[in-house]
Length: 234
Image (tube, rainbow, N blue to C red; front, side, top):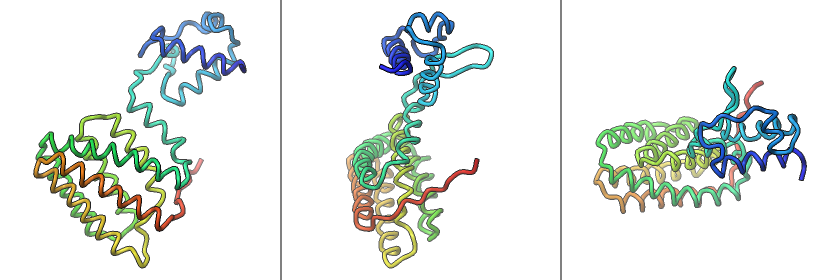
């Protein structure tokens, strides 16, 4: 086992076992190196890997700590890897999203929040009125994200958001022969979801959400669009 791998395995074991629980401060570096049997450079490299995953955090002038290990926060870091997945993998992830969003949409319907109904209605009014691909994508993400948040499970919200983020790179709402048909079908699917939520019907809400995402899968399989990813400037 490489030295860095050994250090990483040791830190993971200490955190997973509860020896270093959420919010705990790391022991002094020399003590930790002796405990794990690794060098300082290997320990630091392992710590950087865990920091990138949101597992640990450095506090200036204070030291290194285990994070709160909030599952939603850790899952949100998956986007760094998920955004590299090609279309075939995205289609598999959409099946996961379909299951999770059906559950979240049912939960949102059961919670009976009148403010959610009004918010979603406003989003759909804007969504139905635009033909701009960028606006459609942004409003679609806001619609589904709001429902997941209303479902009450931040981890589900984070995971579906990560999947939706990569799926959004494969745009199906681009000008073309199929645009109007796709847009109208998508709009009807959104309205079916909203109607089920408005009627406080969790079963209908789950069915509508599942059907809507399944339709997106079918479009992606048929159109197989190329990913559109905006690269950030340094």
